[in-house]
Structure formats: C-alpha cells, structure tokens
Length: 252
Image 1 (spheres, rainbow, N blue to C red):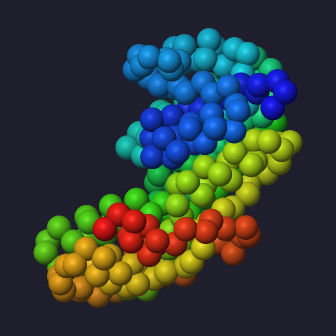
Image 2: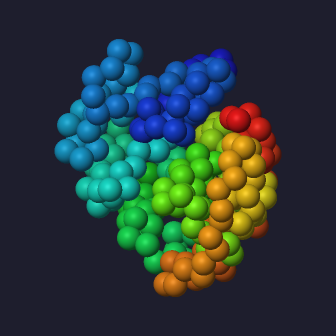
Image 3: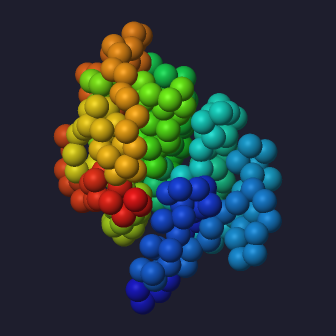
C-alpha cells in the first residue's frame, strides 16, 4: 500500500480478532487493536459505556467490528454498537465491517435476536458498511461437543447440521472485503462442508482416540428443529477451504 490505511479492530483479543489483527498487519494496514483493559500498544475503549470511543475512532479509515458478549448482548452488542457507529459517523469513518452469524434470522435464540438487532443498528447508522454473516467456528463446534459429553457419553441430536469454519479463512475474507468498497448489505460466508452432529461427534472422538458412547436423541424445541433444517448453514460462495477434519488433524 502506498499510503497506510488505518483499521480499528474491536474484539481484537478474541478468537477471530487474534487471527484478524496479524493478518491485516501482514498485509500492510496500520492496525489499531481495541480493548477494554489497558494493554501496551492497543487503544483502550469500552463499548458498554462509550468511554474512549471518540479517541479510538479518531483518524480511522475502516472499523472491523468483532466485539461481542453472548452473556450480555443487549448492553455490549446492541447498545455498544450504537455507540460505536455514532462515534464512527462523527469521525467520518469510511467503512465499518461487522461480523455477524449465519442463521440469526432463522433460529429463535435470544443471543441471535440480539445479533439481528445489532445488524439493524449498523444498517441504520448512515455509515458505509458491510455485514459478514459467518457460520460456526471449528472451536465453537468442539466446545459444544465437550459440553455435550460432560455426563460421560456424548449426547447429541445426530441430525443437527453445522458448517464449521476456520477462523484463518474468515480472517482472510475480512482482509479481502475491507480492500473493497462497502457492500451496504449482509454477505454470508461458511466453511467448506455441511456436517451433521453425528459426523462431528464420531470424527472428534476418533481424532482424540476416545471410545465414549454416543447417545443419539431427537432433541425437542424450535431451536433444535431449526438446526435440523440447516438454519446455521449457507450455500453462499466462496467458502473457506480448511475442513473440520483438517482442524482435528492439526490439533490432535
């Protein structure tokens, strides 16, 4: 780049942020990671209160907005994003890229409803924007399998469908998108394969050399029905390239 573009990254210390920050630095962007707690070389700002936001966005060309709090989405995601977008508008930021989740409009889950409300905040902000709806990360799929196996056996609905995505693939896509004009709409991006939870559980146990039994149950409820219907998957292209089995092979 002949002139460095300054990019503010919220949620920079998270799973995705930890991949996005070095990726953008490697590509020549002037990256400004943001955190709530003081950290050397990072800017300090709090989405929940607005403290430090005006200073954080000053002189920024692009914001990659990754910060999220599943436990308190109304305060951090919805209201925090409202504060961030107001600061971005006042500072004349040229592009905000917000990372959301595939299926939030199809799965009746409180956190997803908050993410959908957050998308509406971005869309109504008057700031040029791109919304990237991503499928579930490999790490999240494994975390869920770990939680489902706490009783001993792995207890799953075998027909739930997911499309595991590698964070490095998404980081690469984000780097590509911020080099383009703001899309002004939501774009979906998923992993290379749609898998059932039966596929996930069997391959996960095999990779770890575990012989735990798998208890296959038809889990009731609207959320479960949506997952069986593939609400968390997308047919959008391009997709990431690193598969669930690639992830397991590298880790185990």
